[in-house]
Image (cartoon, rainbow, N blue to C red; front, side, top):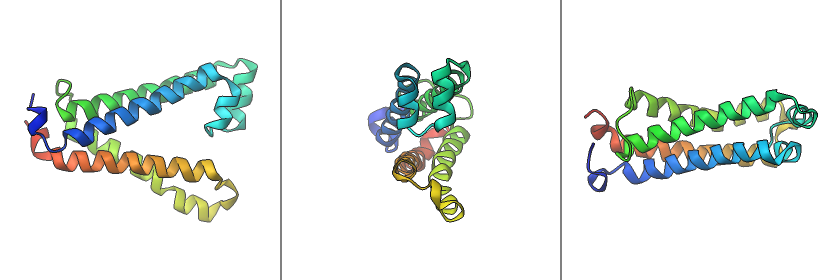
Length: 149
C-alpha cells in the first residue's frame, strides 16, 4: 500500500470517498424517514406513494443505491491507499468518475428536452454530483501513477 502522505491524489480520493459515504447515508435515511423524505430528496411521487403503502420496492431500490455508493467509497479509499487495493482499481475509479460526471451533465439535454422537470432539486442534485465527479476525477488523475502499483 502506498504512503498516503506522499500520494498526491489521496486527499481528493478520501474526500470523494466520504462524499459517497454521505450520499449512501442520506439514501438510507430516506428508508427510515419515509415518504416525505423520498419526496424531499427527489425520488419521485411514485416512490413516495409506494413507501407509504409499505411496498418493499422503494426500500430495496434505495438499499441497492446505498450499497453501490458504499462500494464507490471503498474504491476511493482504496485509491487513496487507506484500504487494500481493490480489483480493477483504475478502471473502477474511471467508471465511477464517468458515472458521476454523466449524471451531472445529462441534466443539460434533459432540461432542454423536458424543462418542466427542471426544479430546484434537479439543478441542485446535478451540481452536487458534478462536484463529486470533479473530486473523483482530480483524485484519480493525481493518483494515476500510484494506482498501477
